[in-house]
Image 1 (cartoon, rainbow, N blue to C red):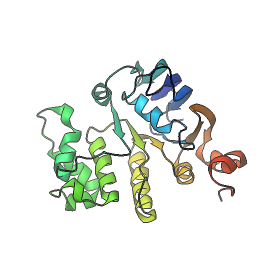
Image 2: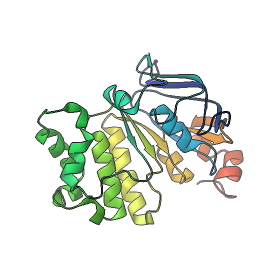
Image 3: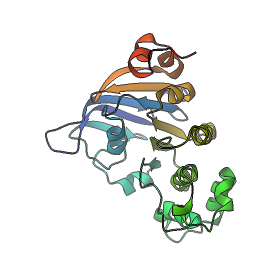
Image 4: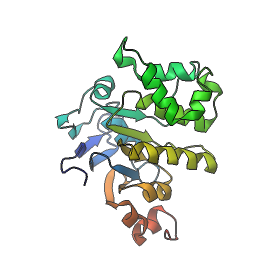
Length: 244
């Protein structure tokens, strides 16, 4: 491990959208600094619910969530952002009526009147296609470009941890490869990433470790490559054939 202390640790968390009806039923999860960890599982397993609970969009009914050594369970999302966590939701992840540049500025709202030019240029350097479209409305971008903008917006504050919820959803195979390449580069630059992803095979291929959720509970966990080649995981979640 890059560090013996987890950057984020979720312990025995129960959470859901309705009182007394928990989607997550005792989930455990941890990620260390610099890691890329995938969360996979069938529809309804609780993957996105886990991301929303970590980021403060849902309050856990039970359990603990510790980020950078401090409890964040019950904190609001903007407070969690200020502690160094970014989040890219699956849908409605950009402001469609604003330009690319304005979206990036919104990603740094907690900085107040701090000059943002150098931060924006760092994002444009990482995503050259966004630089070409900096004055274009986000709603006119392609699906892949919007996903890049959503990630760029979340990276404006240089988070130590980035939560990505289904970044490949509704993208063509070519765009999926492009987005995953960007995710890999962001991780290699030092940002820890939690990758909640329906494309289980591709997610495990690029991850240090992975968690398989089922019905709101932990089913399997281990190194990404080990899960990818586990016949039980392959049969249940990756289709009948094993990964090669």
